[in-house]
Length: 186
Image 1 (spheres, rainbow, N blue to C red):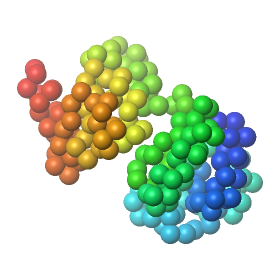
Image 2 (cartoon, rainbow, N blue to C red):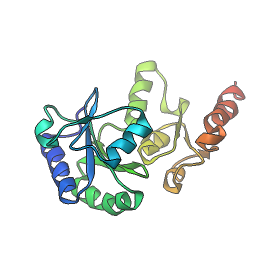
Image 3 (cartoon, rainbow, N blue to C red):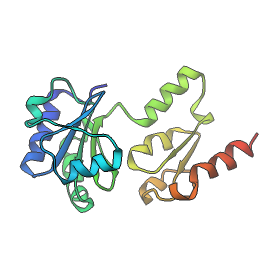
């Protein structure tokens, strides 16, 4: 599902250029950025996936991106989040998915809606599901699920939506949920 009409993608890219922010555009098969820099290298290191240098990102985009991602220092991300939410928040989902990432996606393409659709296809109600998340882009599925779980390392705001808070990623939090709510329950 494309993120938005080209107008929004181009406007976001323009805003990033004006603010000297690194932005990446994602297609179904890859991601692109204008010029390699510390942030594109950081993302490559973190994800294990190498993007493609595109030069002029707006001219390079042949199709609608499925996501746009700003990568910057956490303080810069925090500083710009409200600005971009004010500009595009009524049209797009604008959220911090990791401390260094500000993400723009289609407002209809949330994890909660995906979980609902998958449940419908499989004949499983929301009440019968467990969703585990650790970031802002997980809130919609945590709210949707019959049991919404936040990882111990999740931001406090994410935890506030959860019915249960498990241990962190590094402490076997998912295993704790499986043991406590699935294995013991049967």
